Length: 212
Image 1 (cartoon, helix red, strand yellow):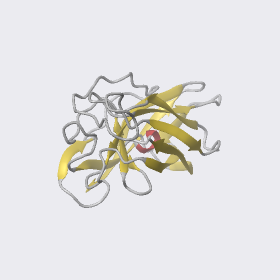
Image 2 (cartoon, one colour):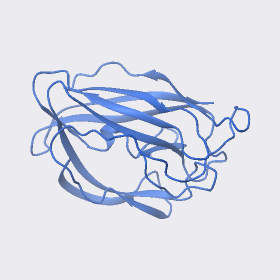
Image 3 (spheres, helix red, strand yellow):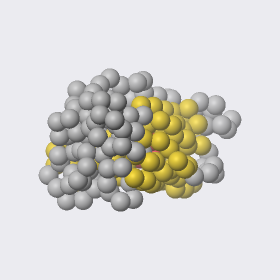
Image 4 (cartoon, one colour):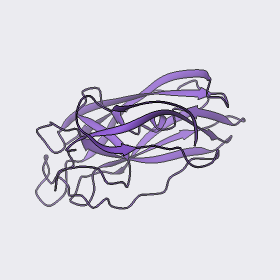
């Protein structure tokens, strides 16, 4: 990924203490941006929800996704790790596929993969998989807001190739439940850009999940 311009620092999701500084610098090349499966982050999990104690839960399922988009890449999402346990939260895999015959460049490099994206009610947030965050013991609810440097990043996807990332599901600070059951929608902006990060085309795309 290539850093193109630095904007400012904000606390994602509203007011609150700045507990973790994420994405301070862009690294990596211009090729296919694919991350492997992360390990456990060592925090505890919520065994509540609607499942019997000891079986893990609540679990996440994807119940709706938006249709195809006309921006040079096609987004998709699937469940990578369904149930919250003591070792890890639920996890999703997001994918961008370039089905065309020319290389495309997309941005913002984090938001297109739903990293640091909140649901419409600000009850849940998706964070880069396999990292440690300030969460309550045995509970996947954050204790502080996550601070992010908001710099616009881009990366390229070769013709016929895909970019994949894993994102972990956390509850935001102040929620009553460790992972509140219910239906939630996530939405982000996907743009194709020039080498100088100037927008060429842009659209919104999203999906809905159920925790139960």
